[in-house]
Length: 449
Image 1 (cartoon, one colour):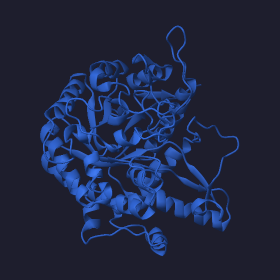
Image 2 (cartoon, rainbow, N blue to C red; image 1 turned 120 degrees about the vertical axis):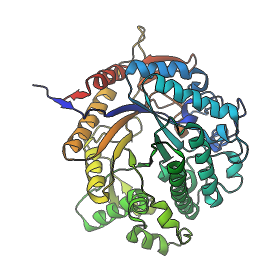
Image 3 (tube, rainbow, N blue to C red; image 1 turned 90 degrees about the horizontal axis):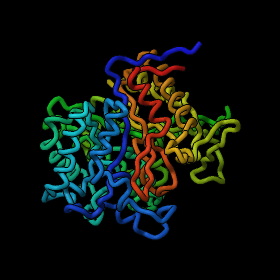
């Protein structure tokens, strides 16, 4: 017999997006360029040669999108603000039309009974600040706090949930270490300094948001994954520990323990990669937060391999299912992660701020999108989250990535994560089967296993 996994009353079922991936209107109404505007216009940087100039045209179609959210019954909507839309130079004069856009969006969400969940930074740094050195320049951390002050003054009377950063690991390493994301730099030492300055900016913004927001609940969002050794060999176990330190603990420990992990610090020291740390930085980073947002997609299985980059070989697991991104479907990893964070870091509240999967979607002549694989993926991960709740993990909500098919960064429009299918040439929106199923989950606040 099927059993029903009931979630706590008031559980925040939501969906997530980010500004550059959906808004379009890249140079309208006074918006300044971002590093992603610059990067995506460079030949060869985006897989299909596309860019986010139009994306989902959410800047013009936001009313339609909020209506779809209401139809789905979403309890919360996580979105990011485009920093250069509000402050075209990243600092200085405010662009009133840009700020007005988010003001109207917040009002529309509240009128639809949807809790706004605002992320200050989802990777679209104003190009004007990149021209000053970007996140490698410590001053940008202070400009970020000033940007937070602008938003909380305008929206803090209505927005309760504030996240400072989305996935600083990605910003630092994919943007500055490996060159796969904007601004496209390949310098490991710069990447570590960027990671440090991002965490510093988080701490500075926490103080600003607390001072300016009415009943503000402030946190940060990290992409985290369990790291499993490919075997019980000591060298594989040690490699897994190092990767965990680089991927997870390098961000968790400063935020919740006030220090970098000693083993990874020592490893980076031997390579001459350590960031410059000013007295007081660690205490600023570790400012009290109300929640941690977790973006979870998969685990990593690693083996020691002297011939591989950084001595790490990522192992394909025979018999596992993989998404179009090449990521293993591993719901157990979400459970492991939630329990670990609760037990090891004693974080007051957790939210799954992103979870979802890219699969090949196509709509039928009848205008339907049958995506049973995405529905199965979400169901399994919802049940993993429910299992963690039963063990006392303080999980408050779950945001599916993504509300809409969108511009998927370096992959362009070749990967679809959305609950809602977007036919980009016409901008037509179609609720996928997974969206209709999610609508039922939200209505019943339960998942049938």
